[in-house]
Image 1 (spheres, one colour):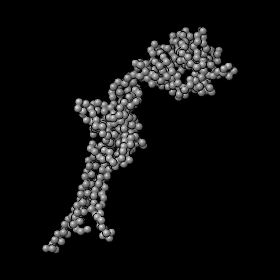
Image 2: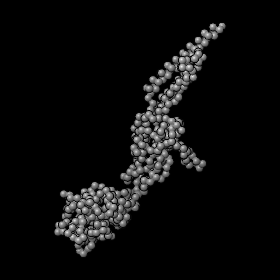
Image 3: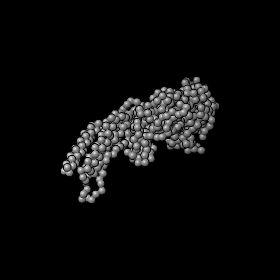
Length: 459
């Protein structure tokens, strides 16, 4: 290498250090930018092909080195729709445009970002501070089914009422119930007054206990589940029930009998002795060694549940969680699970983002329902993405195809990810860059002096 080559090398050094300073300045400028990933500088030497004994240092080139895999600190914002990714991955976003009719339209081309300061715009779409719209699956809150895929829109529409369709119940009935009536029949409820109230085998249509015999039922039964159910208009209905044992297991009879219970519900929400009639749900609940053997499958359809002359409608009693009959010193029912799936109409009060990426809404009727599921993409080589403006990235051949799903990543609601720029580190790099730049100028001035000396020799 000669003096002229040294001059060229020094020029490449100046160019490389200037490129490094450009990256440093950008990192410092974006030290407070949400979701920003700093760009480091990678220096590469370029060696001319020579004999190994005459090998010399070559010129230098500078390249950008992305840090997309380096997590920034999370900051609590208190804004419920803000979110941050704790781990790898990117939010999938799209750009908004205006169609020919002046309506809202979206580009349809996916971009990827770590900027999660999303909040609803005037139409309910979730948009971050840079104007990118979050995509995913919008759900029907009533059914949980996917309504659409694309930019997520949080609707403020009134949540329609839902009639109770399923009552989920799990409990233990006592082997010997503690009733208030006389124990003339071993605590069992019998038909009286010539009425046929009971179902001792299989199932039958609901049989009604008349008002005059209601007290007899109450005295020879124990309290069952009591809960509020809803009709189709969302009106609450108070449902009161009682369990009555109607047969004890015996192998002395032909055919042998099992422990058998009947379930009755009050036809009025306010139960008051003989002023309320009761309806048998029409099923013999049978147990062997404490385990439920009938109804098969652990479910029972109540075709026409009616309380206070209000038709609640067909209701399924789901006992799959466990209905048992084991000895209990209290002689009462021990309820483990009791819930129903109906509710009144309600307005959206609050939104929450779960760590699984599900956006849930809390309504004025007390229900918390899923509204959307955000889309998160991961890449085999995240540093192969091409940076775009506004904190977005584009897929490239080097990055590979996007892989949908969180995997080991979690979503942190009401937080945003800060820039991963360390200002102190950038200042240190800036000092080193300045010194290297100055050193290259000294090389140039020295080379120039040597060239002048050479020219003076010729003169």
